Image (tube, rainbow, N blue to C red):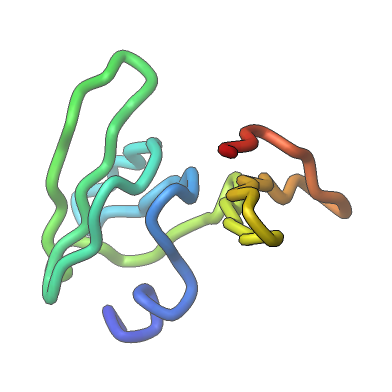
Length: 89
């Protein structure tokens, strides 16, 4: 199942995890390892969750990076559209 998670979720996405403990942590994905995901919550707390406790997930905000010429543009997908969040020259 964690292989499916790694296909669905990318660094920068905002997600809600459904843990086997019944808890539902929410945050931005900082890192995805071989068998874990590292989330940062709104209060800047960093928490690592291992594949054995993840029962499901919701993607709240999908982060996409697009490189356009000399610009590095970050887009956020919300509902049916993309929103520009950052431009790096």
